[in-house]
Length: 606
Image (cartoon, rainbow, N blue to C red; front, side):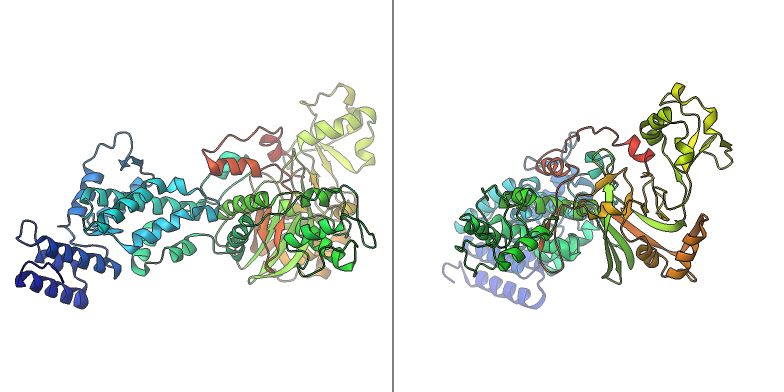
């Protein structure tokens, strides 16, 4: 090595290299050259290089207790004025409690730097934060400007053979720790609180062991592995991240033609349709995109597109499909990204046997041992009776249920009919009870002058009798919750033929109640399909407790990637996407007040 001061300096370097090879003991290495010792500048730089190499090998606690960087970390965290919150390098520290516990546990030794400069783990983690937007998150939320400027400063100093200032190294170690903890918390539980955005949304309270994640990162040194362990583990999440990344690079021309098209037609605008279908992956790009006929290949591509967008897959390019064709790729990318946040709100453990109901998809799916065993259409709440989002356990079924009409529905829908026809209750299988208690007595509705009854002063409770006419059908699936929402049968079977099915008062009507009962009762001895059918035929109300409760997860996802890799998009029927996107980009905003959102939702079970 050129420029060594003397043989003693060379011996120090040789001894230091041997220590590194044998033990990676940085404390001993630092003891070779204590502050104030006589040593040539070049030799000291050589030791700095050895320290840097030590960092590359994974050691991250140089000179514990004696490191000038550790001393500066202690000063920053324990001796500063924290009256207005902890600030380091002009950055507000978010995870202050966890951060202080982290540094105290390691006696303030830095994690990301040594006295010689930043470790490779520093650069790898800063690069990871640059890609936070892959998860629909904002890199600037994680001190990226401060850290990127420090990276450039450190590189410039090292290029000139200088050592960065200990205080600067300490500050950036603290800032990067806070960035990782904040990013990790957002991956685990979401960046925004859904309950602040949506009155009908209950999220899962969850706090990861982020300090444990830091310790693991120090051991394996792989920031990407740390992210995979913190982010939701379901395949839909990882597939959505990849699909959004691909969509971010895509563009397609809007489809401008306004005429309906179907198989057998010839039209000069069909090449435009073919190109648009190919751009979205529904038509093989190797097909003749200039052909002006609507052949079977185009029809199959149209059906694929319609199925992926929740439209009636009739193979006809109609108004609804044209609207979907005209959504830009950038908007579809945004839709995937904002739904990543919804995945982060959901429980990490779903159970061995569980139900998923996605209101935006109008679909229920049942899973056992990780496999989907049942899928059916559902009807969900209309715009002003939105189906809420939460997770609960189904504990019992009711066969031949009564329907206790909520006071709001009785006042708004039944009272006007009674004022026109006092016999309406008896002719439509309702009865009038004196109150909401179990001991309430039956009243004669003909003795009530309904024309004098006010909507806010009903004379009692209206209840619909069990039977094929009952609004709840013949089976009700109960998972007690604060919204008074449940799954149930319906006599209005024809409504399941509609592609848009936001039609209920908030509860979920299921297409195949007997199949769902079979799944729910699978582990309840003595209850097979034949017995359920016999109980229905008996006409009497019957409560059937489940031997093993079934978790029910009510979701709202407008974009995801299914098991086959197909990117699925659904209409934002409750206008929740824009509210969430704005919250992800800045401070959460108050959602617009929707009539009936909060109190009426809880009062209206159907």
